[in-house]
Amino acid sequence: MVDNRYATALVIACVLSILATVYLSVAIGTQHWYQYSSPAVRGEANASEMRSLYEEFIDGEFDEKTYSDTLFRLNGTVGLWWRCVHVPANAHWYKEPDVRMVLECRSFTLAQQFIPKYKEPGNHNSGEDMVRTYLWRCQFLLPLVSLGLVVLAGLIGFCACLCQSLTPTLGIGVLHLLAGICTLATVCCYLAGMDLLHRVSMLPDKVDGSLGWSLYLALISSPLHMMAAALLVWAARSHSQNYYRMTAYRVA
Image (cartoon, rainbow, N blue to C red; front, side, top):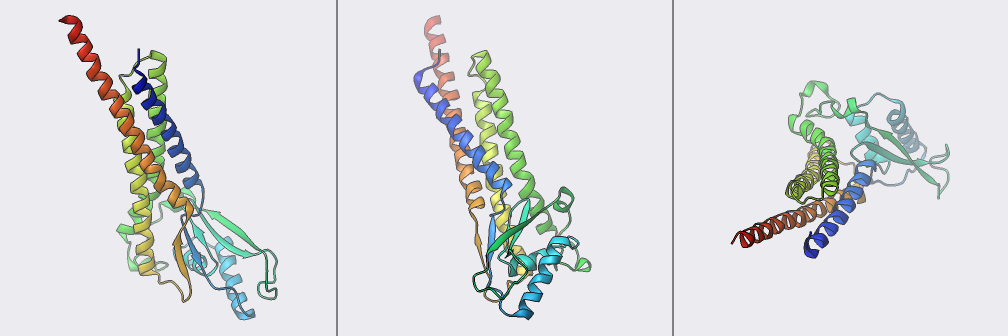
């Protein structure tokens, strides 16, 4: 028989865990982690340059400097698996004052995620930047680890429900705590990587960068996982203590 306090804690923990997992999943699958705001295209010469950058972005060989420059100049957004730019819906990039913009995206392939970063983006002779390389790899691996931990915790919890046992609750709480730490580490790695990128690739004039809502979703999911972990650990410890007290009382 489970005390009402423990049952309530478990229900709240499950709700928090589901919310955190949904937020993290949406954050991983969207591209609005970081976004750039650049001035509008003015004049035919400027439009030709922007069109050239866009064509290289869409059809050219994958290169960090190429896609970074395009993101800077075309109001780009970049996430863990996607990079996107805003371009006019028609071919006349500069003749219409209020042209309709559309979002064009390209995904990072698994192989591209493991490509090393260089001290000077685009210059393969400058030497590999180990810090940026491993920050980039951590930022896309850690959220997958976090989701894996939550799925494992869910499977253990499902089996515990079938067995009508609270014994695995402590372990489930620890898994949620690790998931929250991995998510928080993902955000930290991403922010550190973007800061280092902007140090080696200076933003053009009148181009501003800001954090996007996808990053905030990931940031919110971390404390939700940790709160779920705290409730699970509390329920497991309290139930265990009460069980041993009842056993000692019966023996006495």
